[in-house]
Length: 415
Image 1 (tube, helix red, strand yellow):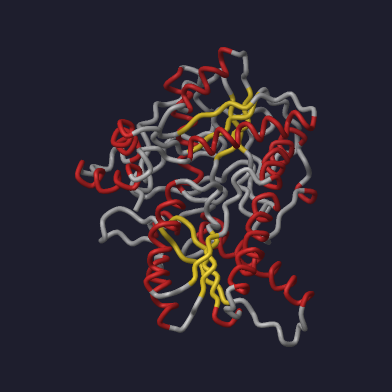
Image 2 (cartoon, one colour; image 1 turned 90 degrees about the horizontal axis):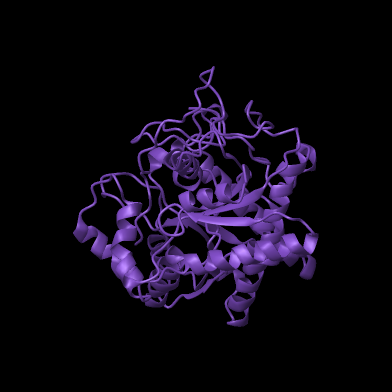
């Protein structure tokens, strides 16, 4: 399985020294005081599309994995074990091409709306790097950026680590104090992100029904990247008291309930509500890494499929709820490993597409940018769960990595 990041490169101290302990580093004026949701419009110069990055050839694989695991002491032999996932695809991760497509789709949507806002692209772990995007921004005279990370949920690796890397890139390029970076809210419950999964589940269940498998023998598996339980428990603001699994698990469960409810509503409209069987579903995890002595979120999707087979389930619809595109964790851990586990038991497995460049998703991302540009009131911001709309400015202590401690970030109140 793919090694998940739990460390970031060293971050240099900001050249801007705050007057108070809690402040928002490198923020625009509307976000500088750290409001939960901004109330003042901001004129941005460009969008920064930030992603994980991936190798684009066999020679890139090991250097890329070294970047991902920097500071963790992972031995070379372990990297080679993980490398074979990439080597099976010619050493090329799908993620970079998918981000090129997403960048082009965002640019097309901006043009369709008549919005003059360039899109820059930078990765955390491979070329093009975030640092390069900031250098380009400076060369083009851009000083106010709004960042879109390709992760919808709250956790260290899916939010805070991006914010650390923005701060690191500003410091390393000498652009701290020159360029300001805000970020869109985590968009786990935005309709643009959720709609593709609603449609995908509908189509997936249609496939299992067409195969003659009744709903009673079908199980929906919502899957996402496993993370260390210590990170999960600290995801989201500490003051929210999410409990075990933190905001990370709570957000996934809330969105899964929305997707299931939408499907059950459609079923009841099409059939007799009194005889419509409820959909059985569960949240499972995948792609764990690290030593076996470190607890990670469970159950693993393959273990779950084993258990479902023993319970007589004949079909599973796999909904990759934690992912925005079909990158390596989807292609290998789901389309290869989970499919093999299902086939071993004679279970029909259908994998739902990720949002990718779905029109609703692309439109939704631009809507999120305009939320910040126009300071849309909270009451007017679309959100499909009671957890949202999530914060514009991350709260103090949000998504701490207990192993690494706090590092400088942008787009959030320190620490």
